[in-house]
Image (tube, rainbow, N blue to C red; front, side, top):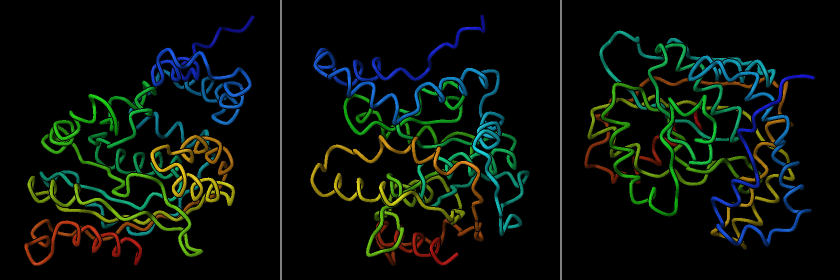
Length: 275
């Protein structure tokens, strides 16, 4: 008999934690479908096999597991790790899986693991990711604590990785593009005197994903149905090559009163798409 795999991702428990007693009304076929679409068995096997790794080392294990090849331009633009400063790294978010893994691995490797992600709170279910994550929950108590959590991240001796769109990219007028970037990365980088390093990540999900995202954004609004399919998209993207362009750091002093923080966020977003 092989060793038994301890489940890290358990759809039934996640439903209970999110829905309470109402979870019992979810039909069995729906639960089984969810388990399939998030590849519960495969993900749990990988998490179990890689359980001795955490932080940057675990992200590198993920890259191996996903068969990722990276073509990186602009590595020389990453600031030196011994310059005594901490930076905010911002990127577009085309995939929702491989992009986060790859950027964390690159930046973590360069800065000896001194990084924190701002991530969706569901990712805090991954023990190996937890040490380098600040979870964001859009509802409930954690939402009220969100400003404190952001503050703690920017106050820490860690570089910050952010996807300022909050959600992964959508297909807009036939082009894969982020939703408008939120301004938090500007206001906090200025407050804590962190230069901003813009990064462009090249990649896209399936047409099915964009159809679901469009339907969800248009008709469901408060329910991010597309997010359910991100793990499936990650498996579809196994073995692919991705292109990453790292831009020159933008000094925090750039973001003066000549534009609003929202306008500056758009300025950096445009810079990223020019890379």
